[in-house]
Image (spheres, rainbow over the protein chains, first blue to last red):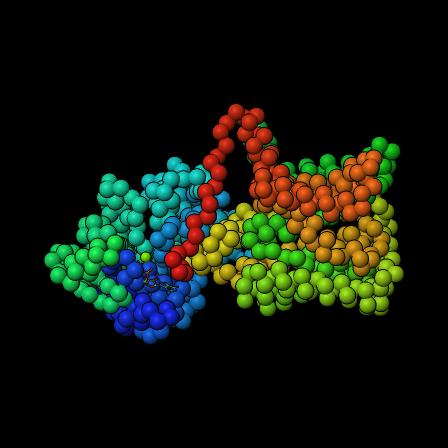
Length: 272
Length: 349
Ligand SMILES: Nc1ncnc2c1ncn2[C@@H]1O[C@H](COP(=O)(O)OP(=O)(O)O)[C@@H](O)[C@H]1O
Ligand SMILES: [Mg+2]
């Protein structure tokens, strides 16, 4: 089994605060990988370093999406490449797609249009042909609308396709964000606290959805959680971090038994 | 047997057909004027309203869809006007070259200004456009060879396809230009381009994660807005047959902002209505009222008050009122108000 993502020696500080300190882990092909840690451990910061919103002070983010997606991003060959220094808007071309902890949607647009933005990088029609609505541009638009409907039906919200996204309940908006990731031929989907704000049965559904996406799209999933419930249920392996440092790596059972992990979370409870 | 009704229904639903019908109705106005049912001065006011609607359409793309603001609209519009006069009258190159120059040159300058300012931060576009507009205004006053300075540049109605145009023909040209601009704007906002602009306005961070090259799309929106302003400038010149530097001041730029805000962000017909309310209403109604009509600076006060009222009470502008009215008529509940945009999480918490 080869690795899709290999994070090596990632470090970043904000002012005096070392938010990540020499952190390394890797995500295997078609694996669901969990990253856990108490609040403020640096989980979102890891995401932002992988997706190049933050430029790490040191370290590398090796990504091996395969020849097809490398080609889409303008690279030849099929070796892993280091994403560090890549412009943010180009990262998705490699098939690395994320969701946001706070759910980012366009409230004024329909649910379907929101999903369509996920396919942005695959639109080939030129600006001019879109402005003139030439047949090529229209055909492409129709084709991706179809694909977006499929993504919505995969998340069981296709009946809401034409409604305004802003008025939808939180659960629907989270699903919408997931559907959007499916538009970009994902190789690795990274989800930032996808279970936050969901109730128990919704969280169970989410676990099913994550497995289905992995099986159907043959991609890996990296998910960050503060709460242990979902990760224990769905992840193949889990990496625990605390104060930006590596703590433990293993199967859900191993992590559950790990003393250091317990201490980290207990320490958090003391803080509250 | 026949599928004529479905074809008709499909046509009726096609927004482009709506734009054409709208244009055809506007084309009746010169006919009304020539038969004496409409005063010539009213026709002039309505012609300028349509010209301002074209400029405002560009600013709506910028402000409404992309969330950017330009305060230099008047400068680019004035540049379009003087270029049209210079190319048509001084160089003698005719109508089409004049229009082309008014489209291309302001756009190129606009893109340069955009490249320099948008790289830094979105708000810098407002500052840079304000500056460039002031520079252009000074140029209009000083560059006598180009603009005839404060004495004003005099021009004439254009010759099209070998035929000398008159006021009515120029009005028709304005209508055709407006309909084309409405169609183009509609196409831009209802496809991948429009979604990218929407995404960018909602959250630059999320837009980038979706693969939107934010700088590229900001430049695109600004280029289109500048192009519309250049076109509107040329039409202004052909319609009035003269241009004075004092026309192209900051008040005009702010008035265009008012048209967009009052008419309704992200609404094509709303923009036309906004242009009518901000430009034509003071001209046709307020100035003719007793007492109030004599107050100096009345249009300034009027647009100022409307902007404040719109921002405070009708953030969706007149388009929003229209939606509410339609909703009441249909006795249907309006779709829920969009909830406030969810903020990006990158950054300090
Ligand atoms: N842009 C930033 N500027 C300053 N400090 C930051 C920034 N981003 C994150 N941090 C800090 O880094 C630490 C890790 O934050 P974060 O990655 O959001 O934690 P988590 O997602 O695990 O809750 C926190 O102490 C946070 O305040
Ligand atoms: Mg976080």
